[in-house]
Structures are given as C-alpha cells and as structure tokens.
Image (cartoon, one colour):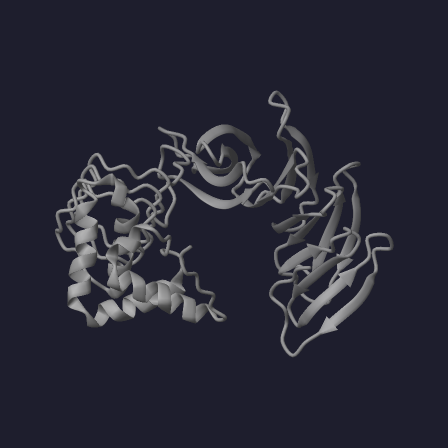
Length: 348
C-alpha cells in the first residue's frame, strides 16, 4: 500500500500540492486547479520568481498541439501564466488544446489561435485585438458580453426597458420606435413596441403593439403567470397574454394622471402596483377584476415599491421617507420608517 497524508489545514495541503507540481510538471495533468486559488496562488508566487518554471509551463501548452492527452495540463499551465502576467503577443498557438482555461485579463494581441480547442475558455476582459480564431472551437466560451439582439432594422429604434420571465426563458425588450410619414410635413410619431424574445435561442417570437408612446417599464409576475405588464408615456398600463396569439391585449389600465415609471406584480400575481412620475402616490390594481383597488397617498414622491412575500404589505421608498408600509386590505399606512436621508429603493 502506498503512503497517504492528511493535512489539518487547507493551506498546508495547497502548499504541498503546489510544491509537488512545481517539482513534477506531469502532475499538472492530474489535478483540476484552475479554480483552486489556494494551489494556483502558491504556483504563481513561485513562477513570478522562476523564469525556468515559466518556460516549462509554456512547453506544456505547446505540447498540447500534438498530444491531446495533455490538454488538462496545458489549460492549467496557461491559466497560471496569464495570472503571472505573461503576455502572448503574436504567439503561435495554432492547434493548442486548453479546454476550460481561465484567460481573463490575458494579453493575446495578434495571437495565432487557428484550430485551437478553446471550449469553455473564459476570455472576459482579455485583450484579443488582431487575434486569429479561424477554425477554433469556442463552444461554451465566455467572452464577457453575450451576443446582442438586434431590435429592428432602423436607427430610430432603441431599447428603453427590459425584463425576464422568472424561469429566464423569455426576455422582453420594450423599444421606442418612430413611425415616419414620408413625403409629408407631419412630425414623426413615436410608439412603443413590446418585443418578446426567446432568451435561449435569441429569436424574436412576437411583437406587441398598442402603446402610442415609448415604454417606460415592463414586468413579468414571479409565479410564471401568463400576463405581461407594460407601462408607457401614453399614461397607460397594458396587460398582455403570453398564450393567446390572436388577441394578446387583455386589459388597459388608464388613469391619464401621470407617466408610470414603475410597475411591480405581487408574488401571487393578483395585484399590480404602479408608481407615477413625480407623484407621491401608488396605485394598486386588481389583475383579476381589472379594478383600481387603492391609491396610497405617500408623504413624498415615490421612487420604488415592493411587495412582502405574502403579497399583503406593499412598501414604498423615496423622498425624505426611508420606507412606508401599506395594507392591501384597508388601504391605510401601517408604519413609516424614518431615516436621516430618504430611501431610493426598497425590497423585502
């Protein structure tokens, strides 16, 4: 039987593993150390002072071009070199195999990465100017910014609000579109479109039209109810059905008093709270009966509203008040939290 060792403290274990790897580079292929900072920190400290170790680590990366069996060692090695601060300016890395490597903040300007195995590699904030990735496999790679969605084929369209469904499958992008009347002196007319996208397929599913001015906010309920809510500069709140493709508009709440800046569903999706611009007032709407239930008159302009987990106690914040708690049943102020300065946001 071989000898085994037990360390009482993780730093001792990390140091022992790191020391062994520095002595025997073949162990780089045996351990998954990319996210084990305790081990990599010891190796990085040694590599910063040992140029020969850096050369050996780079040799591991080069060896992966011919031998796919050392890809784990290569991924560990280049991760350490990046963290040491080594720059790979115009390096010939054609065909290297470094799946899962962490190259964040790395310097790869002009690097030749053709046909490289870069699956699951993290490139966040890496410098890739002039790098050649022709034929490289980047499945599952992370480049920081995800692929963007093109909202329309005109510059007169921009996203002004967005939200996800609770399960993250659908994304709503509320856009400000301009309907131009060509050959006419009529001023262009703004409208607000609600675009519903598949977040996973990055595909536009359908567009909801009806708002006559651009949209200020949109919200999905957290319990996966099929009703999407949107508010607009046209001073209305609209409920849309995610299921009925033929007649998607379910109801329009219309008070025509102020521009709605915030809408929030209660956890059970039975109520919808709205906050109007520059007004110390919260409107509570019934999603079931489509009635206005209460208008809470706050002591100062409201910036945000949130529901308690049971959905029975809305809270508001803004102005000189830290937070006010309200009753859905009575419509009255339950409690006011005072602070030295006003609250800008509130949450349960």
